[in-house]
Image 1 (spheres, helix red, strand yellow):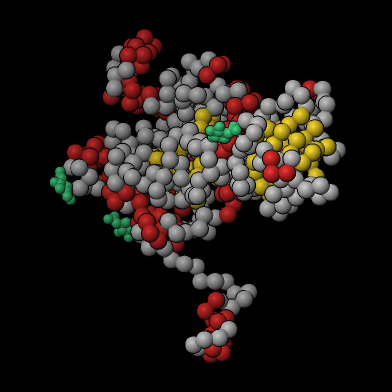
Image 2 (tube, protein in one colour):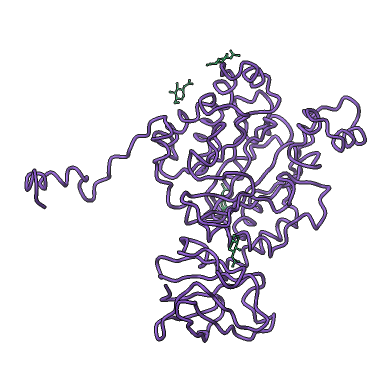
Amino acid sequence: MSGPGGLGALGLLPLLLGLPGLPQARPRYEPTWGSLDARPLPAWFDEAKFGVFIHWGLFSVPSFGSEWFWWYWQKEKREPYVKFMNTNYPPGFSYEDFGSLFTAEFFDPNQWADILKASGAKYVVLTSKHHEGFTLWGSKYSWNWNAVDVGPKRDLVAELATSVRNRTDLHFGLYHSLFEWFNPLFLEDATNAFNTSKFPTSKSLPELYEIVTKYQPEIIWSDGDGNAPDTYWNSTGFLAWLYNDSPVRDTVVTNDRWGAGSICAHGGFYTCSDRYNPGHLLPHKWENCMTIDRSSWGYRRDAQLRDYLPIEDLVKQLAETVSCGGNLLMNIGPTHDGRIAVVFEERLRQVGSWLKVNGEAIYGTKPWRAQNDTVTPGVWYTFSPKEGKVSAIFLNWPVSGILELGEPRAKLGETQVTLAGYGELLKWVALGEKGMVIALPQLTPQQMPCQWGWTLQLTDVH
Ligand SMILES: *[C@@H]1O[C@H](CO)[C@@H](O)[C@H](O)[C@H]1NC(C)=O
Ligand SMILES: *[C@@H]1O[C@H](CO)[C@@H](O)[C@H](O)[C@H]1NC(C)=O
Ligand SMILES: *[C@@H]1O[C@H](CO)[C@@H](O)[C@H](O)[C@H]1NC(C)=O
Ligand SMILES: *[C@@H]1O[C@H](CO)[C@@H](O)[C@H](O)[C@H]1NC(C)=O
């Protein structure tokens, strides 16, 4: 080291950098986006890659059309919803009356935890409260509009948190809707063009502090800004507390839905839009939140088998998302009586079985320099920094048994190619700058290590 200060400055260096072995002073975040956005995302989230989203609430009682049931029925007065109510419920039946029908008698949180674990997911996000305002925990701020006072008479958030923590290594996260469609305080603030903030100060913020201190979620998945700015919600004030002083300040991650204009711009990871899957690498950590039921987040009794994405599509979503630097948050909607419908259970277990074979291509990976192949469609790359391996997830098994990859540059005598779940090294030919050609083993369907997408692991490719 030379220059002004010289040895004197060198002597101070250990103090400036923090003494080795001693904990570094944690940074304090200011309630501004500039400060909050600079917080590094806790590493576990990027490593996890795959989570399960659970939309459960009073909308699971009619379980018709969509979790937006109340809004479509009473605000938009959509014909199918109005007709459904007129046909099946007595006159004067209100949405509130669904409360006592939300029974959850089959809800076995241990069984849910076991299914979540079998899916290979590393985190779960439960709707603690959707736009209807009904809380799945016994909130002090909910009057009696919650699952402890009405319906199941159980703290569903506490029960799932306990089982997930007791039986699995999944991170436990909570979804929370800022606004509530029909809450009179919110509607009053909206009428005042959000110059008053009765609703956030008496409802949504107290709830957020309550769920964090009670359940210590490691994800706060915020949603439903109601077209109000983040200043109305005091989102930066809450996040500064969350990152500085809350019990989860070291591990918690948040998304980007904290007020009009914050989506895809502020907060933790970006969700941008529902079912966001850009197909190219993004410079910021992002998440693709999507649904197994193509058209609803809540359970629908009126769904047909064709409405559920087949496992091939789910594996494709996972491969595309992870290759492009995203996490996949795959949604299921349990029933009012507390079941995970077997179609959802099957899909989750299928993803889990695929990840058992191909997990090395997913967990803990980083995007590679190329995301998908330039010659063969349906090939998605990831990179494992520890082993220095490139994984090529290919979604179609070629009829010829020969897979041409335009991206990886192989080196004779160095590069090795294996198929995940299959022992032997594969033969290949290098095409120089044009990539390589790989001979896949000839396997019967029974001999295949998996069915819906396969992984080639390549060492020493560039
Ligand atoms: C945690 O799991 C163990 C073993 O499965 C069980 O015996 C125990 O009762 C569980 N504890 C809670 C709080 O559920
Ligand atoms: C709300 O405040 C803005 C400026 O802060 C003002 O222009 C607007 O008139 C106010 N609206 C109401 C309904 O008070
Ligand atoms: C916003 O939140 C912060 C942190 O909790 C708090 O200090 C501040 O008073 C809040 N501001 C408003 C306007 O509620
Ligand atoms: C790579 O992925 C992008 C985005 O999905 C797509 O537009 C492009 O066609 C793909 N390339 C090939 C060769 O399939």
